[in-house]
Image (cartoon, rainbow, N blue to C red; front, side, top):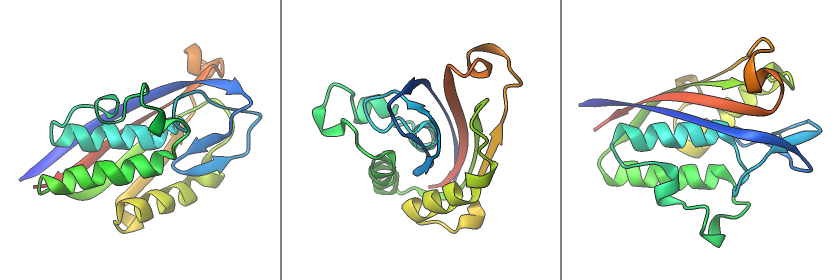
Length: 157
């Protein structure tokens, strides 16, 4: 059986933090606020993977009240999520993800993000699509108050 999962994440931008997306540190004067490294792209993919098998959300498995997850790499969390999915007999087939950000320009980093995610999730990079979309100045994303990401995954069980 093929199962599909959808994930979404959003974090505010703040000074003094690195901007990590898909495990890649993107040059920026602001980064994302959060308990972990706040990597919205990895979080959206993790949410999608959990959703494909009705396993709840990231907060259920990795609560921000647990000091073990303070500053943790979201790629490490993805590794744990993949183990949960595989423990239920799931096999990740592909990922399609989009990052929504007014700035910085992400296109130079998308291939590296896809490769880092593919390596972490142990699938070929040609099964990982990472895109970026500008909110065209609209809303909180357009005002550069935050960055969001959404992802869809396919999992065979």
